[in-house]
Every structure is written in C-alpha cells, then in structure tokens.
Length: 210
Image: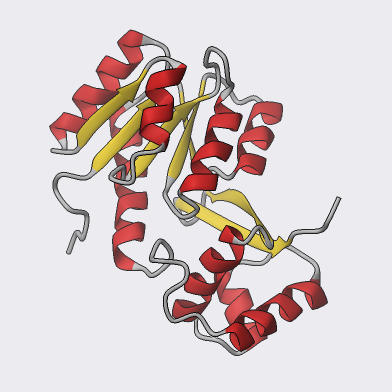
C-alpha cells in the first residue's frame, strides 16, 4: 500500500521558468503541491519552510550554486529528501552535490515518469521508516556512543544493514541514530545509485576532522 500522503509538498529550486512550470505540472498530476523558487530570495523561503516534504534542486542558480543550497537545506532540515537536477552526467557536479548531502539525481531533460518514480520512492521511504523522524526523540547517549565507536573501528562507508550487523542494533533503530549523528555533524553520507535495486542506496561513515 502506498504510504505517501496525497498532498505532499515539493520544493522546486530552479531559475528556469519553463522547467519550473513543467515540474509543477508533473507534481500536480500526482496531486503533489509544487512550490517554486526561481531566484535566491524565493529559494531561501523554501529552505526555511518546514512544510516541504521533498526538494528538487538545480545546480546552476544565480548568486548561489545548487550544492550550496543543498548545504543550507541540510543545516535546517537534516533529514528531508533532496533530489538534484543535473543537465549532464558531470562527475564533478555530482560529487559536489553528494558532498553537500543529496539523496538522488534526476537528469535533464526531465522525463516525467522517471521524475515521478524518484520522487515517489523517496516520499514512500520517508513515510515508511524512522529515518526522517525527530532526530532527538528517544535517543540513548550510550547507544549513540556505541555506534560512533563502530564507525571509528571500521573507518569505511557502510549501509544501514551493515551498520546494524556490526553494531548489534536493529536496522530500524540504526536509521534514527544515523539521522541524530548526521544532525550533529558526526557522520557523512554518500549517495550510491544501485542500478540492480533500482533505488538510491545511501552509505555512511565517521566524519574525519579536516
């Protein structure tokens, strides 16, 4: 059963009027509510809006590139899903987006079915797991410290299942503690699109001090 609420709010940050219009129409076709930011002041309003369920962010944006916008979103909303819009398979841009904290990519020109599939997958994931819940709720300091020691011990990117196996903590709890540690700037995450599974796969590791 689909757990995405009908009127999910989608924040679209792109300075191209035609693209914003097209994505808005795609969202409306799924009964999602689009909100657009086509300049920096409008983007700031979306960044500060706690009602946004998912963000779509273009890289090329006046005053501030998309990666910096993603960082600002992450500072305010550590767990909200973010999909980057990129015009080409540019490794440098994708790396900048991943370093900033995106969850997935949608290539331009936009294909409606592909975008719908990606947005729906992330909204479902958000609705059906604890990953995007309040990061401070029912957090045990002892368990958080134990997870930090696991990350330090293995010193590599790990998925949730691997972290659960190595820590002895259930996957459901690991999701909550990862969001807590990310909010505290203790972990870093890497988006790895798994073509076999057809969905984004996020990896985590201890954030080393530079």
